[in-house]
Image 1 (tube, rainbow, N blue to C red):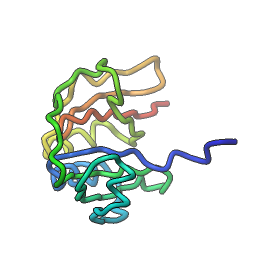
Image 2 (tube, helix red, strand yellow):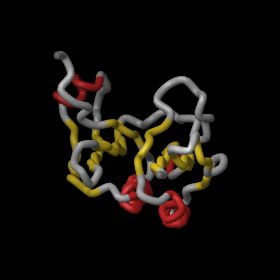
Image 3 (spheres, rainbow, N blue to C red):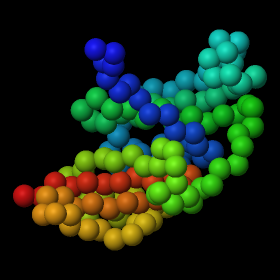
Image 4 (cartoon, rainbow, N blue to C red):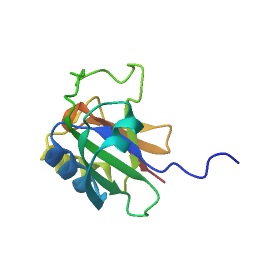
Amino acid sequence: MTIQRLDNIGVVVHDMDAAVAFFLELGLELEGKATVEGPDVDRLVALDGVRCDLVVVKTPDGHSRLELMKFHAPTSPAAERNAPVNTPGFRRIMFAVDSIEEVLPRLRIHGAELMGELVKYENGHKLAYVRGPEGLIVALAEEIA
């Protein structure tokens, strides 16, 4: 066996406070904060002069983590903040939730917008895609009986 588990997913953001507030409102829990820099970090990520704030949030079951990163140096290139869901690359992350109808209004307070419609999919799930801070796409899945 080569892989033991998915340890975390890294997400680069410009507004760390908005990103953290959004994911905490969704129900993730703060695990830790750090600032990383120095020659080891530079060599690891193949950039010079890295100074980066990290915030790790985890799912309540403790099995999944997001590592939110704000680079102070070097300057990050501009990104397409509102790229559609079919753009190549990592486009979205999906979370299982108890009630999409309960979560959506809370996320809207943090600037999230429903991308399409809340749909009932094949009698097994309700699904919704929302665009949150930094243009991040978060899918919500609610299992229905």
